[in-house]
Each structure stands twice: as structure tokens, then as C-alpha cells.
Image (cartoon, rainbow, N blue to C red; front, side, top):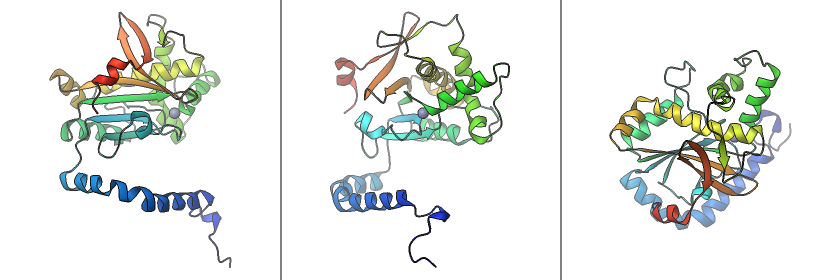
Length: 245
Ligand SMILES: [Zn+2]
């Protein structure tokens, strides 16, 4: 019998060693610096003001791109930053549960849906459409079943009656970028359909935001909807000053 770890059981491959090294470095270097703040948060509980919903893509480091730390963001991540419509029958209530908890229990003031460039989920959605142009459904694998919550984004993208989506003054570079941007707008609509979100919006207790992160540019864009146009723009200094510290 080999004395070392057995990579065939999937429990201790090289990536696992990397994880252990990372944890060890955290305990040595970072934990002493954040222990006081984490102890305070443990005592007082979390009071985040922001629900941040984004893709599971490894290149999106939520704390880095928002300069946030422990207690700041209540984060939901999934493939394609999708928000199933209420009653969509997905058999997956996790996103709806997180929305309900964030809005009704934590009373967050902001919800941000963040898409990104080169998104594998958007590529898969586009690929499925091109493979099966006559079918609105997707073949039944768990991934594709999940991605059907992005089908309304595909429809929205091809709806000529909708205004053009622009990215800081330019058109989207390609179909994937266009779908990623449209998907943010569409998933914000899905959010509004959730009861807790609709109620909080009526009471002026909640604001929704759209965001796009361009990985290759290391550039974040925020959605602004002015005079019917859908524009993702750079964050201006004014917005930077207004945002909470
Ligand atoms: Zn993605």
C-alpha cells in the first residue's frame, strides 16, 4: 500500500496540498491581524448592508474587487450569477433562501448582481442555442438544467425592441460579452419578482445594482439606466466618495 495520499479518491490531490499551504499561511500571517475584528463580529453578529450575487468563476475575488472585509458582504455565488424566478420549479431554493434571509433577516440595503467577462455559463448558453436553434430548452444535465434560468437573458438579448447595451461608450465586444451584460439586467428583473425584494423596494428600504467585472482589464463597471439606454460605466469619483467606507 502506498504510504502517501491516494490521489484516486479525490481527497488529497496537489490542489489539496495547495489549500493546506494556504490555510497554514493564513493562520500564521493573517489570522493574528484579523482576530480582533472577527472576535467582535462573532460577539455582535453579522450586519452586512450588501447582498452580492455573482458567478462562481475563480477569477472573481469578491473582497478584492469591492475592497471589502469580514462582515461587509453577504455573498451568493453560482454558475452564471443566476436568480431563478419564484416558483420556477428548479428544485433549488438556495438562491431564494439567501435573498429572503438577506432582505428579511439581515435587512441589507443593497443587492448587487455581478457578471463578468469570458463567463463559461454564458458561453454554454450561447453554444446550446447555436446547437439547438429550434429548441428553447436545454439538454438535461445538472449544468444545463440550471442554465435554463439564463434563457430569458438570451431572449432579451435578441429582442430588437430593447435598447442597446453599452459598455463605457462602446458596444459589447462579442456575443458572450453582450449576453453577460444582458444577463445582469435580466437577473435584476428576476430579483424584483421575489416577494421580499418587491416589498423592500416598495418601502424604499432596498436598492438594486448591476455590475460587470472585466477580468482581462481588471475593470469594474456599474449599471446606469439613463434615458432608456442600458449602460455599464466606470465608477466615477463621486460614486466612490458616496459609497460606504
Ligand atoms: Zn461566470
